[in-house]
Length: 320
Length: 320
Image (cartoon, rainbow over all chains, first blue to last red; front, side, top):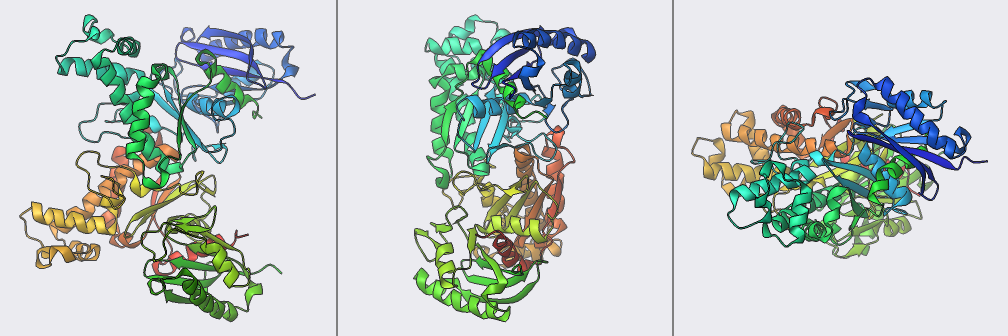
């Protein structure tokens, strides 16, 4: 009998969420542990293995599990390692796929970064079903990307391809990015970028805004969204300008791989048309003629609370 | 017996050059006709077929030819058509692969754009032998690109992927590009872009330059090169700044596909270290840390007079 399930593990800086998933993309059993509580990766893996054992037993035991997929920051598909992840407690190069596989009795484990996992998740269960050429852009604390060409995820020669959050969008007077360079897409179009834009506009402009009631340092992208829903002009402008810079970037990305679709994923997509409309407008205005009107701009169809685990789990079907 | 030869045809706005090529990349027999002399594509194909017959007969006849590869501006690999090529005399969508195949007794013909042909040529016979992930940037009248990922050329969903000459490098006050948009790489880093930069510097600056002896409108990239060889400061600055913008662009391209190498091809590479040194410097200064030092910056190893035909011919091995 073919093994009917896979396990997905999404490792974030705060939580590690995992679940047993069936071929239709339903999460049957799930659990989580705190990533940040384990300074030693061996302690982390031991605790994770306990949680995995529980959900795997619920699903009928290890013989039911085809493979385990892991989505993790700075995860390298080629060697199964997390490499120098700034937001995780373990330093250097951690052979996490191997450690997890050993801890769960040898179930094969495949690992990649979270944005690549999102792309595989969209292809397997989401908005990219049936598509062979698309790009997923994740809009979270940072901006990540997973690129699929001809049905295959692009890993590059070293496993690190698809860092589209670090394409330079503003060469003159660009914002400092977390990567140490200036003007990266991520510095503008991430959740933190949105909050930063709001703080800049509040400092620079004098018009009224409900955001002025908050301590500027405490403003989050959620606050900006809430203000925009109330038609706050500054908040609306923040989403408009964030969408515009994303649309400009997409027009350049299309010149690279000419995808059928670009799919946005993650927290900022909750802003809906507030950000989607300016993205589409800027894509249209900036696209090279030969590509005009050919690339669909979509939001992820995966339920956000499940998407990261589903994306990671999709990798489990190919784990060896 | 396996058929031992292929034919390559490079179609440019001025000349169409063709040759019979063996598996080692030697051009055995060659010829050319004037592209621009045939307003009707059927007349062009008839004349081309005559020339092809001559070289094919020299090589022992059609039974010796495995396939024909064609590199042409705006050539679409998927349908074998030239589509709306601004520099060719035939308007609209021309099914050139089919026309040529019929005219030479049914030898299979594959067609792609000239930059993609260059990439396949480098992979088959040139600097990219053995590489699976690389980008070829052609620096000619325009700037083109051929992208190889996992050993496969990236065509995109519509056959037009790899328009890296039209990635926006200067969003503020960018130069008008031939595509109608502003700030494209091609507007700066093509041969015409180099001449344009020289004219700008001559108008803006007051220092001496041998280029001032020329009518500004007549200055070519060759003039700028000749002046740079004589250590003319303005000409040296033109190559320095052209290399810098190319290096900035490469750093962004690497974030997309993380290639092993970027290979430059075409007229401007004759400038040698005058342009290669600033490219490498700008790549180093602009590269995201995770990619630092991993991507080689190379010049084509193909003899320029042969390269376009060789590149096109390489496609002939896979023609069906």
